[in-house]
Length: 468
Image (cartoon, rainbow, N blue to C red; front, top):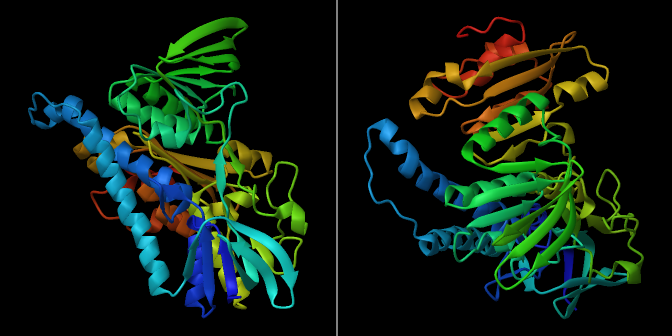
């Protein structure tokens, strides 16, 4: 029986990063992963195969298509007869995925991580550690890391199949739907809705909550909703789905809104109402691995489960279901196993929605800060007063800084606008070190850049923005 120091079950962002970092630290490492794409083993989990990467590829392609059709003329570029080749666009998406998933396989080989393709299951504990069924081969490991990720949650009224799809199906439509319905106005819903709206679909988004992006700062969510509605996305909030009836040509959805029953007809229906942990087949019940009431693996602050030598990270333990959060947990756990001080600061994890305009935030919203007892001061600056944004032709949105009025420490930063995903790096860095609005305001930013809006918002905390 092969023996390893560390065996990782799951090859997504949490699992493959944990495996690589553990190997860098001198452990003998194996990873068992069951994900397949196109009938072949494909490392990288949901993120690389059917999540973060392919969706961003389509978001970029669809945004270029819309720019050529609607915005190029403003730049003095006349384009006639632009048409969509959807098959080629989807093919480009797949080539990006192939490159990155193949890169993980290369990194495993480079770092001498043994890879098993198939299911991983905890079998029993013996004197050498944990015996794991790794795709039909029993191996033993001193440390086992459960990183099996999550899957889309089904709506009981609308099981996946046919014209009712989850995110992976929504990334592979063979034709642009004329009428596209989406249940769930979260990150996946608005990103996929944006893709297909740009390509020609009429998009209707149905959301059970009474408002849009209620986890975001109120000012950001209001601005984002206004921009999306201007683009043609149709939103309905506070709805209750009462019936979903698919047939050969589409889907009929019945819902109540403001106590009125409404029936809508769609060619395709995307259901994006959250995700559930992947623990089926793990052997949790047989070995006594403790799960919580929602099925997530229970861990302590060091990712230890109730079983000695068994750990869990990523989506399967709950919390923010973000690839970068999962990766950092993989690094922190590997370093902890090596006797180092692995740590993740969950207070400054950035959130990003890759729509146009983009939405990003880290830390507390203004209301959350007040609810926690902070005396708050804020600064806000618009992209419409920024030279680079005007040069790009995209002056939508703003940056908002939330700081403690007594200490000036930055409590949160919230953005909606062009490329704000790339502006979050400096924000989380300064927040990680407990920086103040003054620190950010005094940092020299290159001109002309979009990042100057961050500086000006920090200046605005003390009402001394220079260009407004």
